[in-house]
Length: 309
Image (tube, rainbow, N blue to C red; front, side, top):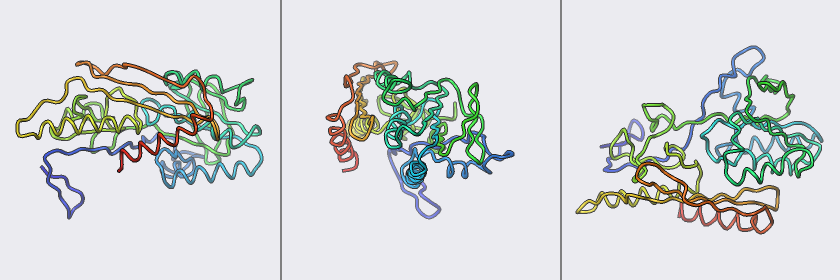
């Protein structure tokens, strides 16, 4: 078996592990009268910043310019589930609102009302948004979606109306890149949870955001999936091959910043019980505070070191 890197380079393999992440689905909001000309232009002008790099810098520059203007409105569009980093849109809303201050409005358009599906963090965020809370200038628009964006950044939201925005953080719906997409539903890579081996192609393993299990799509749990996958591969390549461990467990942890010096956290343990992945245990910080914010950087550095060496 061989992996073609390009037209000139082909690498042989016995086992192949893929973690290509996500790609974005064109929402079909371009090319019409008054709209951006195509999906690429939409992404440049209304950056998703859901992949680090130029998009992150572009969103930062737009937020900086908005802050210098003294007032204005920023819209965050949450993708439909499943998507990378479930708490991400809401922590982004918090940190941006903290940075901009009370003279600015932040509106979260949340088509699947994903805020209510992130476990105990739901209560943390719900207690932050709206009148009388820490961020009265954040409005959570649940169960509605963006139906149009003009080139002037007027955002139309179903059953809500038009929002004249200065910055639009449009995060599109997501799927696995074509190299691993399941041919059955065309969205994510179906795998066996005991080994992360593709259910459609033998000896190819898929970990991280691209795989189709019910686990969240995030960096910490991708690290955990990689260890289950590696153990299964080592077992299969032994002189006397062994079956994968039948009931593997994975862990997901997430620190979520609430402002520039406070954060909350959540942790969950998952187990494959022979038929499905079930949640074994959930832990969380009772509130957000400065100590959590300090620990957040230790957690991140340890995760990066363990993942990348």
